[in-house]
Length: 484
Picture (tube, rainbow, N blue to C red):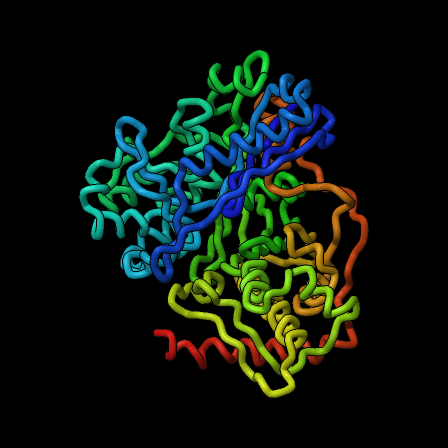
């Protein structure tokens, strides 16, 4: 058996698979986000441990014999988080998360140093790890002086699981300290933020062994024998392993808390000025590019909170048939935006409201706004030389057929639906655990799921969708001066 642990923003998911990659069971532990100030987003690392223990306990309650047979564990996690620990492994402050934008001034300063784009292949985004450390040095110098190690969220879990300070390429590529082409820490970039390689974890590939489960935890969980822990992956690369998006040109769209348009690459193809991320993949000698929007299902969940209706009820009110855009536009910039704007201070908006703008109209606008933001990502990827002819949909938002029809029509490409099953980050992490434990061929393991159906673009609405997208594109420059 093989265990995948996915540390997300809203919870930890634990998934068991067998040697044939059949899912045996899964369980979850819940997490909350603290937002003490505007633009801040934090979590206590101790809560990750608690949520992981809850998730594994849920598996143990239902599948004790299967859990006992675990030989490999894979880790997936939310990227970019700055987890700061001292020489005794004590956490120095709450982790600053991926969607925290407080360090936009520091990010701009680092991005102005041409070495960062040249070596990392990416803009220094406020959500990345390096500018967060520059912010801590400036605003919390006592904390900065005591930092012994900087760990990404899943790698803090690894420290708890194994006692080892280890990370891997796909997650580390989102720090602004990795030489992405060479797949190694850059002493030059670390020095630019007054840090050193000694404060970084060791690096392995996501498919390699990266520690063994501590005997104390193995006993607690009822695991007999050694269980190796794989390098693992950042959440999007792990999802790509779960979806089999590992070969050149394969692509998926993820509708989770954030939205991602992800394409695998057989070579390193950076174009930082497009605000497209160029990262290492979890498999050796493989890279990927992705556009990221900060609020996908987060936008619908915000709308749900305001209206008092569940997200499922809201999308249900739209029915099954895609409607033409109404003239009401929604900008999903609730916590700023990454691709293509790299703007931490822009905020969301409804435009074009009138007396007749019902709740259903606003829901439709929210779904279209996210679809058009993903279209922005497609255009950015195309500008970086990536051709996408179809995508596979994953994430919680992909349960809405209406939303997928809107995305297919906005992008102008078919959207494939995987057959019933969970092929997300926890499954990808479990696959990496299997590879690390058995030495299996990564390409042979990371195969795509069977497609259960395809949602084609609604050609009758392509013209009105294109007009609505042009209106959407015009809104960002129109409101930018109000936010800055």
